[in-house]
Figure 1 (cartoon, rainbow, N blue to C red):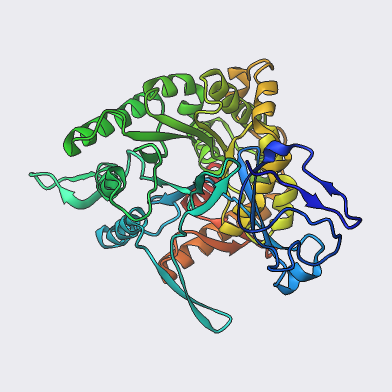
Figure 2 (tube, rainbow, N blue to C red):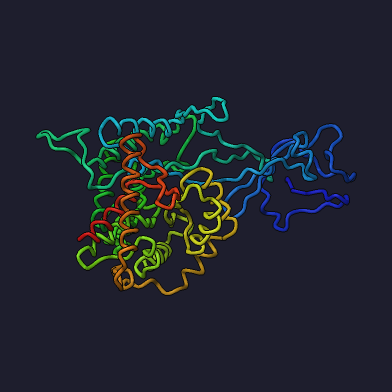
Length: 466
C-alpha cells in the first residue's frame, strides 16, 4: 500500500492532514531518507514523478522533478501543479456558431464527428512556433493499492443542438417544405457518437454508454416531451437501447422556469442537467411583459425579484428532484473573457448558490474556475440549501418594469449600448464568420457576445421604442 510522506528540512517526516486525499503516484520517488537536505531522497536517482491527490471530487497532480530548474530550486522538488479542470464541455451547434445554412452546418457536423472519433486536430502558431492542438490521452498511475488506474484526459463532450423553432433546408419534405433543424442535429449527433458507444474509437467520450444532448429554448413541459419523443425515435432508428440519449434542459424561457418540475418529470429517464441562462432568459422575460411597460436597464436586471427567484428556484427544484450526485445543476456564462481576476473573485458565488457546474468562456477560465470547487464543498452546500424554504412563484412572475422615469441621458446611454452590442456582433458574424466573439462596449470593456446577447439587446430596444 502506498502512503504519502514528506520529509521536512529538519529531517522529520510528516503527511497530509487528511491522508485520504492521496490517491496514487507514478515515477521514482522513494521513501524520505534519514538525511535531511534539499537534494534528492536517493543518491542513485533524483526524485521524478507525479503525486495524485483528490479533493472534492477533482484531482490535482504534483509534478515532482528535482532535475528541472524549478524543481531543483524548491525544497519539495515540485516543478508544477496540474489541475483537473472542467469535467464536461459543451460542443455548440447553436448560439455561439455562425452556421446559417447547410454548408455552414456541415462544417459544424464534421467537427463534432472529429471530436467523437478522437481525430480532430487544430494547427496554430504560438510564439513563432507551429503547434497542433489535439485530444489529450488518458493519464495513468498506480493507486494506493498498487493497481493500475487512470484519469480521463478529456472532458465529457456534451452537444448543444438547436431548439425546436429553427428550420433548415438541409433536407426537405416530399412537398418541398423545410424541416426542423433540431431533428437533423439529433440524428447527426447520435450517428457521430456511434463508434464511441461501441467502444471502437481510440479515445472514449462517455464512460456510461450515453450520448449527451443539451436542448435549448424549450418553452414548457410539452416541448420537453417532444424532445424525449424525438430521442426515442432516433434510438429506435439506430437500434440503441432506450434512454441512451440523455438531455440537458436549458431553463431559459419563462414558461419552462414556471413549470420546471413538470419539465423534469417529462424527461425524468433522460435528464442529466438543468441550467439557468441570464441572457436568453432575460430576453424572454422582456418579450413576455412587452406590452406591460418599459423594463429596467440591462445593468439593473440582475437585481430584480424575478431573476433572484429564478436562480434560487432552479437549485431548489433540482435538489428536490434528486439531482445531487446524479445530475448537474448549472449557472450561466461569465461574459468577460479578459477579466479572469474578477471571475475568480465573483464566480464562487454560484457554488455558494448551489450550482454543481457553471459556464466559462475558455479553457483558461475553466482551469481557474475549478479552484472554486476546492474552496466550496458543493455537496455540503447543497445539503444546507435543501433546508431553506422554496422560492416563491409569485416573485418569479413579477415583471421587471421601471418604477420611475429615466432622464434623457440614461435613455440615450442604454439605447447606444444595446445598439453597440448588436452591431458589433453582427459585423464579426457577417465579415469574419465568427459566431461568438469579444465585442467592446462603449466603455471599451470586451464582452462575450452571441445570439443570446442579441436577443436581450434587441428585445430591450424594441420594448423601449414601443
